[in-house]
View 1: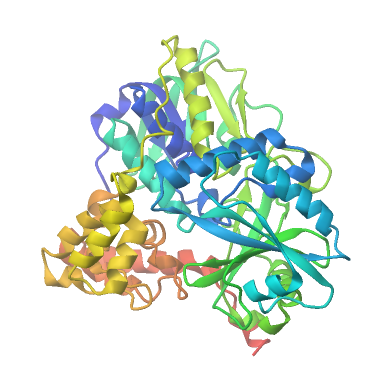
View 2 (view 1 turned 180 degrees about the vertical axis):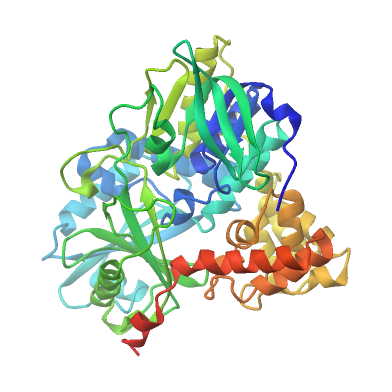
Length: 544
């Protein structure tokens, strides 16, 4: 596989952003909308790191109230509303959550009620309903499978869910590129260029083409998430450790007996730590764990004890679930890019973000950051870039500017019109709207150009062949992993996309010109990639 890097890549930029996770993509979009010349680089794909391994919630951080982080909660609630109402209503949707209350638990009814009131007060003018306190009978009506013994009631409140967080990053990158930014994936930064104590740019390797390139800029933002310290290694900027990431693991299961219609925010019996049981993509997402991690950042896997913990605690919360290890479809894990703290409980490390200057002028590293607050972090970062460049302040417009898939005066009306006019099966049309928003019309136009492109590639999801071609032609996918995991989202189905990978490769041969060798290599690469999600046969077999 090879590609041509445009000669202009070596031109001078205002800013180079290292890391195309949600924060890096958000910064690139904001900077481009304010007229800055931006280069966004990542050693992998857009949204292929921590962004993809979150619990996929857009939330105010109810738990942060326990740690007194009122400013973070207020910011998160404001940004939740911004994403829901203006920026990404096609990708961010309201999510009801239920907190069951038990007298014997660490967080009793009075403490939770106080937290609910504070949560409402910190989000004036929100579009979501206020909280309700339910009786035990009311709680069991919403979640009949709950453990009834000792149940004192429940708190019902609303946050939001980004079912496909990867798409949120992709659309920010697409909009950044449409506004003039250069976005280059599979471009690994090898060296930070430092001249006279100031940043001069970066040298990077094109991992697909093989060549090394240099790009120059007066400001470099290190937004590499858990890899922030690695980017700084061997430079004058290297010093005290910045990232002390903690690992979070999830399990994915099919709907089970007693499964709730709302998400559950429950307290683990063993250690009192809150975790979520969330309806997600016609399955349930359960997590997360929170423990310090010092392993391989490029292949983080759920450990046996984490999976057993989540299964065990889910069965305690919902006794009728009866989950076993054999019923875990797959797992996923990621490392939170939190500030380094030498000692203490991992759960107590702040979730706030910090923009750290370095001893090299013009070089800054982003530490921390949440999916929910990516837009406000980007605004703060670009304000800093403008100041560093000596440019006059330019207003940030990203809070009012919808992402490409939300660009419609009335998204609800557009949705209904699309479904009524689409010749595709209803399941396929619904899927296109959920993944692409208003851009579903572009995928449909492509599908209508050839009967082959209207065929499904996954019966489970309803994904159609045109999405594969669209991913490579219009959404910067470079590999089948990019296509299935972070564009079509088919890779998140119960089979981790293994039901679709062969069909996707054949489509790439027919419509994108791949030869047999590349098709076979891509299929094998995809199978290797998804191994990290799967339990070994030995572990599963012991439960059967």
